[in-house]
Image (cartoon, rainbow, N blue to C red; front, top):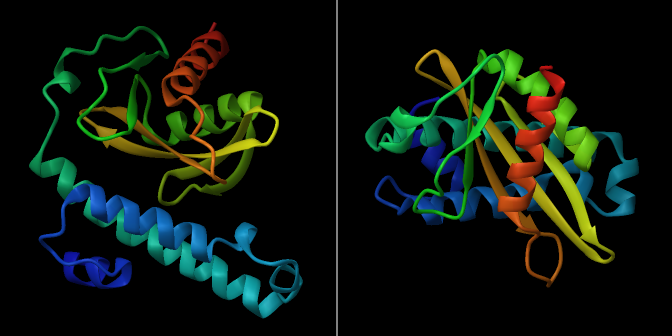
Length: 192
């Protein structure tokens, strides 16, 4: 998929600010995700298949644009992270509202480790191994549910996990810093 097709699929233009691209992706993902369908739509196989296909297309489009954006603006903090055997090093917060973990593993190894570690913290509601995206639902307090989307990207022989949080309701999202730290601890514990 090229940049123009990816922009068209997400309903943005080539010069749209990155924060608006990300917001469009999150809105469309929430709108089309099979798990966010009404009860009637969940039981209809054709509708569920359509929603699953649309979600996959949106994820691929977002990945294309995200990789292009990353190529244009590599964070200097990426250079200074350290690692040990299988480590997840929290990195300084970037300019946007995401959090990052630099993983000393291939993207595939990192993806599976993240799925396992996330499962210990919350409910893993969506996985797309091919695009390296997973969604974790966390409930830090009763009634306050947050969707955390994790993208795993290849980065200089290692992997970069980018985390985004969005509330599934009117409350504020769960602390992404706290989730990132928990995830890093779980990953470190699993490597020992």
